[in-house]
Amino acid sequence: MVRIFHTLFPIVCVAAAHAATPAAAEQRAAAEFVQATASRVFNSFSDDITDRQREDRFRHILNDSFDLETISRFTLGRYWRLASPAVREEYRGLFEKFLVRTYSKHLRDLDGVRFRLVRSRPINERDYLVGSSVLDGSRRVEINVGWRVRKKGEELRIIDLIVEGISMSVAQRDEFSLVIRRNGGKVEGLLAALRSKVDPEAIPGDGSVP
Image (cartoon, rainbow, N blue to C red; front, side, top):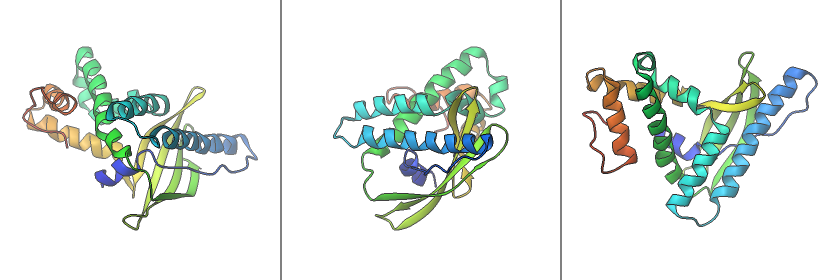
C-alpha cells in the first residue's frame, strides 16, 4: 500500500464544480488547489533532470502545498508532547528530508497514469476531502485516492492522503511509533533511523524506518 502511495503521491487532477454558496466556493477552491499542485508536478518532472534537481523541485512543492508542521506533529504521535524543543526541531527537519528523499525518486516516470474526479466534499468547518480514482495503466490497477485539504487562515494545505481508505499519515505514525518502541521508547532512536535514511553515512538506530 505504501508503495502504491509512493507512485500516486503527486498525481491527481480534479475538476472544479460551479459554486452556488460560500461553502461550495470553498469546496471548489480545495479542488482547484489540488489541481494546481498536480499541474505543477507534471510541469516540474516531465523534463530529463538529475536526482538532485528532482529532490529540489519536490522540496519546493512539498513546502508550498503540504502542511508539514501539522503532518510532522501527527506522525510523531504522543511522543511529540514528550520530546524536547530541540528534539522536535531536529525531527521536523529530518522528517522533511525523509519525505523528499523517499518520494522524489518515484517521480521519474509519470507515463501511463490516468485519473478522474470521484467527489469533493467538506469533512468539517476547515477540512475538505478531494477524491479521485487513479488508474495505473502499466499494472491495470484503479485505486481510490483522497486528498485531505485544510484551510489555515487564507491558505489551503494538504494534510493527509487516503489510499483505498487507509490514511498515509496514520500509517507513517504507526511505523515511526514501532521504531521508537524498538528503541526503548526514545525518540532519539527514530532520529537515528531517519538520519540513516537521509544520510547513508549516519549511524542507524536499533530500529529502521521502512
